[in-house]
Image (cartoon, rainbow, N blue to C red; front, side, top):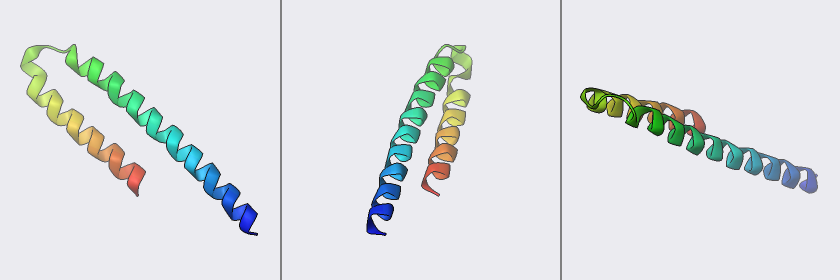
Length: 62
């Protein structure tokens, strides 16, 4: 029983690590996209980017 629990914990840790890596990759790709937009949109894009990161973080932590 304890071994099963340990295996499940390891699987969850691996999935969490992969999810964190995926989110970091998404963050980098979004940053590249947003940084290439017109200068006039910088403030709005920054705000939207921050909101998106907050939503993603909220989804991971819940």
